[in-house]
View 1 (cartoon, helix red, strand yellow):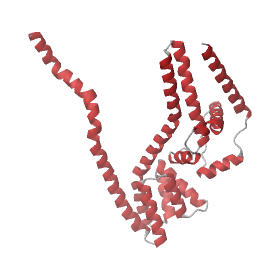
View 2 (cartoon, rainbow, N blue to C red):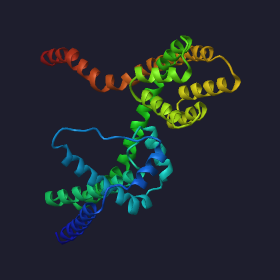
View 3 (cartoon, rainbow, N blue to C red):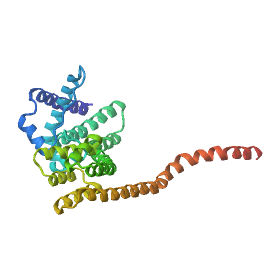
Length: 306
């Protein structure tokens, strides 16, 4: 109990210090905002909520500031992952408004908060010391890994969605380019008609072009944000067509045929994996139930006869 009281006092003092620092510190300065825009190439805007949403946003802003301060002073020193690598993961996941320092701070908060909650609850419930120590170690590791696991999961799903929607984009580009529009105008019309992550990346590419970048540079930035086989083929074909002066419509039509074949091959691969994925649920859940329903009456009859 004495150790529990000391730990609670230390964490309470740390929480009070962080809250005071969060209330006294001001908002993000203009130089920090400009640096974030330069780092990501995208400026996120918070949606305007209904009445009463300001308190929720202020609490979330305070929590984000605390996480950012912890990440800058503590979490980043403990992590093996560099800030540049984490920023690339955040960009690929579409989390443009999240900074690497904030993610490091969330890692530290979860790695400390979850074990403390388990320690407190376990002591109240009278759990053995061995289970308490094992739970503290496991929850500390899980708390440190969870933010990165969520980012990787979001990034993987987002890149899969971009890869799946890319043939539809190329079909739209083929139709609009062959109708007489320029490639930039075709991009703009396709971005207005599409939805999802691919449309967001396409709008960001158009925004970079409006800021003065060439088509080749903006397409290479698109590839850096969404590095998938389909996007890689698309960017390579567009840049080679611009450099060699080949007809854009012919390149897009050839690329559309290739993308359709690639989507068909991916669908066939998933179909071939389906029986293997269904095998374990069948063996664990379905077959035992069938055996009970089919064989149980016969077994009962045999037991009665014997």
